[in-house]
Image (tube, rainbow, N blue to C red; front, side, top):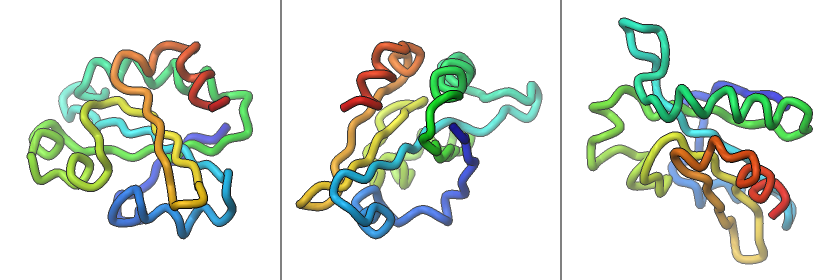
Length: 129
């Protein structure tokens, strides 16, 4: 597993735009949405993100999937009702680990959200869905 920090600018404008990146029906991509580090502590400002990162790293360390890691920014950016992550990527909370899968009709998504990201059973269910 590789966690790859990814700039927002390299993503399509919304999750539906992932059809171009998932060429075959059944292809999947994972994006782990987290937050920026707090300038004073050097750690993510969200406590759930701080707790989830090591769990996700450990679970995926022996898996072949590449996980794109995208930051939603600092708290004011994330809380803005105009945040692209809320309006275009359907995020309700962070951390969120999303599996996007190419279907006959486009792209579907499955999410593990907030405290559930720390549940290895739910991570396993997401990967094997």
